[in-house]
Length: 154
Length: 331
Image (cartoon, rainbow over all chains, first blue to last red; front, top):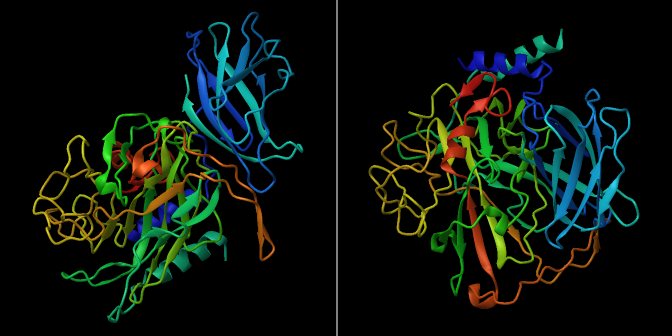
């Protein structure tokens, strides 16, 4: 049975593993299909972004920018909000045109090193595939350490 | 020869059992993180070291070949960890902590991803991530090679331990994360009947005041065990992976209540940038305690975070995929 285990492990390791979630969280971006059932106008996704000094200097601010990758639906827009609890500051950005090729304006939140809460919301019912660009930046414009954890997907 | 055939032949060669000679051992290191104490705000390239192999006889002589490892870090997003706060006047140990229902975010963040597998050219042929249902890294499984542990040697798996933030409003001077680890010598034996000869568990057992259901223990207890103050009591199991020396699971195993830990210190005074041997270490800002902290005579509280039994039970098994999906290799 041990040999069988190893054979299975080796076979599995040679396959390309497909994602089992609708979301993806790779370095410096997060994405998900929010409101997949298309019936929840209040669907909200929430992430925790850790910004830290990984050798390039301390974080000065978090940068976010959201893009709606679904087909256009009039009146259905996506927004992203970032909140830094240590200094109680918050910002927001919205993709102004549903399903076009352009992202929202980029916004930044000057919290420094620490953990930010990133939330995603929309204006009406309907599934939206979004992608958010996330960067922790130093005062010199260098990327600083960025880790992303998922708190809630709806 | 194709890569797959080469791997198969290599692995089959390794499976041929070696003739074991028993040597007397003077000392054994437990399974522990290579850097068990870190400062807040710093991501560390850490390593989890298997210290020695499994038991090979009834008296617990170590030397059994280690074949795989399963390890998890506490997750406070999809589970509710058991958290204890120690504010005692002198010393500090999780035994003297008191259970708190305050959320984990009171004491630290991020709430998940405390330990993330680093894939590199390491000791194990196979490394697998463990995640929760929303994709947060919780730990890893690794294995596929039977390392002769007749004479103990460390077997390492690289793990990135997260840059932990201790909130400025918290009175915590340290936060210690308790890992749940299984060092597996015989993966064909299910955990339900595994003894220390097949699986060595380094299990976190939250036996401190106020924890619902404590004291956890074993059917026969062990009053002489030094793993926990006062010995191992007679009591219920904490999780399905506490570890036992006998197949009937009545006698607690060697690693019961002896978990690997990651202790994160609050940077109360700040740290200047330094250069040593050509390596630049960045400056870290001060994070002083807020007014009114009384723990340890005003020095702050020590916080201990145990993975919940639900997380341990769900995530210790070894699956081929993340989120406990795919082929089940061991449970």
